[in-house]
Image (cartoon, rainbow, N blue to C red; front, side, top):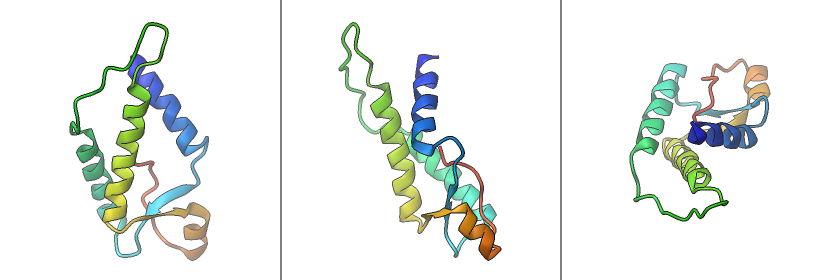
Length: 104
């Protein structure tokens, strides 16, 4: 439960209250983007290294840094697939379709 709260708070700070940016690739359809986001999230969930035990009584655990690493793995995966972060307003003004969901 604590982990979910830490991740939610961290994502709120990273994404902002109302995210106005989305991952976009002009070469991908909305459906392809949705599949790529799901694949990148799944890859990010796979264990990378054993978690480090760095907590002491009265100090936060390493959950926040693990959440940051997961987000970074999702971002790296999407960038490798040719996506970039674009303002929604720009895509709307151009009449472009996009997958409107945070990839986390």
